[in-house]
Amino acid sequence: MQKFHHESTNADHFWQDPQRQPIDDLCHQLELRAHTKYPMANFALCRAELRGINLVNRSSKQGYQLTNSDLYRANLENAHLFKLDLSGSSLMKANFTHANLHYANLSGCNLLGAKFTDAKIENVNWGACILQEQQAAKATTYVERIDFYEQAEEVYRNLRQTAENRGLFETAGAFFCKEMVMRRKQMPKYSVQRILSKLVEYFCGYGEHPNRVIGFSILLILLFAALYFFVGLSANGNITAFDTSISPLENTKHFFSALYFSVVTFTTLGYGDLVPIGIARALAALEAFLGSFTLALFVVVFVKKMTR
Image (tube, helix red, strand yellow):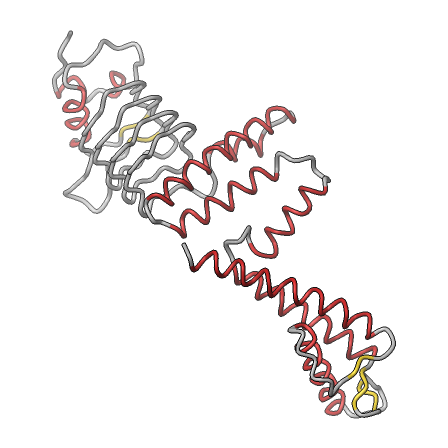
């Protein structure tokens, strides 16, 4: 094999040529190229044997750049890639087993089939959405769009499992939400399953956001309070409702009475000091049902988050 020295490998066209001759001591030569601190872009490293390579820029707060490169099936097992910028690169089926990817930039990368077993992935920049999700949004045909969404679901599932194995449960939760969204977008657009999935996302973020359940509960309580305020409640034989003939202060008191009734109905306490009349009875029954369901949902979501 031809051996290439540091001076020859500085020429980027050498590294960008997928047809170049095999390089003796590839890891060392690539490390020397990285130490020049010039950005590395469009490097052809398909199937490269890079086990244990050290691409950590110890002399700077900024990591080395290895962007828009082809690392298809590259072996990066036990590699030291702290803060390495790999944005835009193809990491399809690359092996990052036991690699250190702390603070690495993997935004815009093709992560399909990438192996992150026991890799250190804390504070990795994955980007707002992965490559396949971006491609699905730009797809011009239904078949192509569904295919990209299936790939995106697979990638998010892989990342979720990796994060769970590392104990990064917040990160895993975010990936789980994205995984479910990708699954939903494969369903027929106006199907019942897709609509229900969207509602679950809104109400509780697929079980990852208890605060959404709280927000939904508050909105329901306020909505029903406004309805009771206008349709009226009975308090010891007196009607408590909006009335243009009384002062704003009295109307405000009536609204807070309606709000109080809404809270005790939502929580199914029902003290009996205020009684629904007319259509308010149907509203109270509906709110009690929604309240029971929402409180049960909150318990499930909260327990799920706390027991991880």
